[in-house]
Image (cartoon, rainbow, N blue to C red; front, side, top):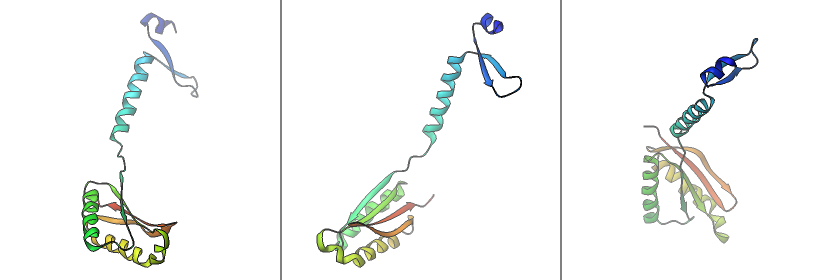
Length: 136
């Protein structure tokens, strides 16, 4: 304690469970600042997963399908995950097979850009499928 007071620094306990406890003379505020700086640098390097959505109807026309497929390709090329879903309104729920065929067709068309993470699955009024981008 006296050595730390002489130098105008703090006595910091590094490992309290050791016998005898390990202490270090340092500037504690500077230590905390450096630690926060390190954590912030690690956090900024962490990748953030972006999920883009594309919505279809059970009777989506070919032109609309191609248009949405181009957007899906762009999203996958940019490295975002894709959530494609068919939304069933009212009585259109009887066309479940058409929705599934549409999503499987999309998966097949986007095979070179991404891989299917979750096959088409009906959840309430929507049939959802996830596609993850392929690594470069």
